[in-house]
Image 1: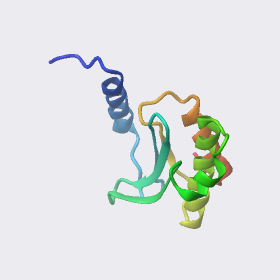
Image 2: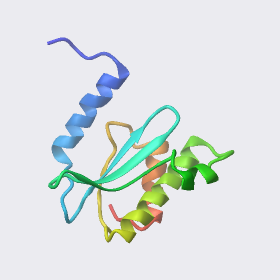
Image 3: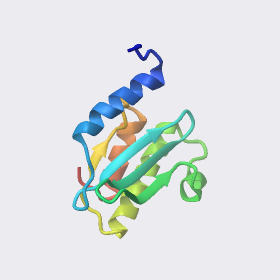
Image 4: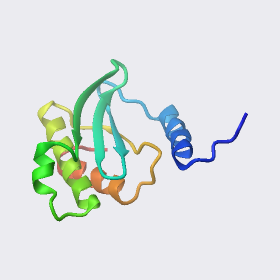
Length: 122
């Protein structure tokens, strides 16, 4: 089998390795993070039902209005607070964090900290 050598291919392998251990349930859904070059996305997912319960991204109007002049890390924190508050409104208090194959560093860490500020426990 050929080795995967691209950066995105290696991330997908790391993500699959994390997903073998991390699964969202109805009692404790999964907070999944995806970051692109310019934006960051987060979803709270119930894997047992296969549905997204809550989602948020840096593209949305609530975040877009506040993000002018801020760094990508600060915007990721805003997205985390948004997802955390939406999850609390939906009755979700605890989640399991899925970093998506990214290092727990920078934007991913800021999103997690923002979600904690929004009221999530993980």
